[in-house]
Image (cartoon, rainbow over the protein chains, first blue to last red):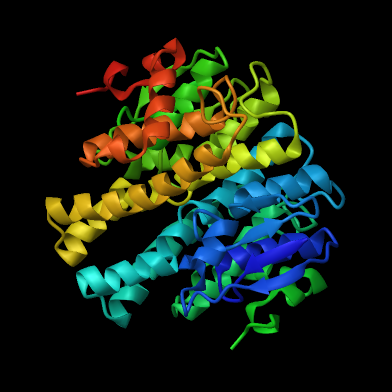
Length: 213
Length: 213
């Protein structure tokens, strides 16, 4: 499989973690967002939405949108499972993932920040305040849900990584970049530490990618 | 089941359509976003994220985040199916849904527009331009994917409504409110017409809800 991605993209990072947890190797195809390679015709032919990541499967099909690709991975490579077994628990883990995947990440995306800079004259302080607002609102909710879960182990759900962790860790990385003080969310911090011990998370880190720089 | 929602909220609208397609009745509990009922302690006790919708199931559990609730509905009430049967087709339908659910709706959400108004001084023209930018980018991608799908029938996938339509129709409603010219996306327009013929979509419309006004 070919993974079209960018080292610093949060959705690319998320998908790399999921692929690593599933034990799947892919060919890394960098798409440089800084030089707007994602807006060129070559990449538009791969993904009409012109966003990373995209995953080209071995039968020549292209999957887009990391939430859809991660569900596809879970269906086609069920072991190790990244979702629990009961419907209610699956809804809980998917809700944690969606807090990050819908209500934090897309709002702090590169294209959004560019719009704020160019149309509203936002400077770096204003950008950090914007990102900090949505990260804080989402992490407050995430932390509250972790605190409510009496059965929880070392990860966002139970004692093994789930798709919730797959979404959370790249968002923590992004929060650090936007200078958000993470000490306000100790449970999230502890989950981050547990994930950081795992090879699958370590190898997915932006700094470890061939296009990092 | 109790459905905490708001007539004009796109994620509430989306969930109402899915519940109707599954033939499920719920008790409608309005949460008035205009008077910030969602930020009050009563509702925070239901959903720590303080966003609608939330679904309280008959065993007293509360599900949050419409993408997670819709997957839960599909798992617990599989008929009629709102996802196709093959993993690749499911990934395709989920990608269409995610274009709306991640890359359009959350960016045009009420809390975001309030931030733009208060922190960046955005007026109504600037708000409409902001919303129009993200709706257009997402609908361009959605339309391109519809055009690429040679097997497609009257809906976003095949000849029956799927979760893609569940996400799309409320976003079209929102696009009209932000004065986006929809004639640019004829395939999306045709899907909207096909959905509008169905009772499940008609009954979910914002204007048909008890709190509409």
